[in-house]
Picture 1 (cartoon, rainbow, N blue to C red):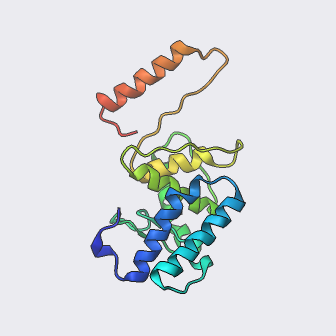
Picture 2 (cartoon, rainbow, N blue to C red):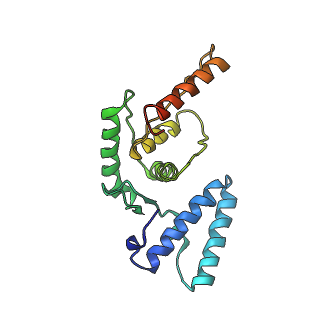
Length: 185
């Protein structure tokens, strides 16, 4: 997702590699003990193979994305505090087009999750299973991530009378929107 011209030096390449490694492997771990072990293993491997001395903290929260600037290049994102004005701007764009307005407060974990979701949606056939308690921001981050990638969203509303027939109708509607209306979802 990052072109060779956008990688200025070895340190930047290592940051990109660690980010992608964390996204592909570490994000799938659900236990903090396992994530810590992965952090230490990746740190030891990088020091051993690249003969680099570096602090694990410098690499564990590195984020890459394509939404910090308007040119949509996949670059290392700024610190959360520097990124918040841009995210507020993207939220305003979402709210100007959406039926259901969102009022979000961005903080470190929120921005990291948004970065992950946006990265997943940017990839061909990208998909994610978002798990968490109600009200934790899963759907808000998914909708904002979709908006950042200029996708529309389709939500199935489950009711007491929702059955297999309604499921098929919802799927047909979504497939018509994608196939006939050429909407990206």
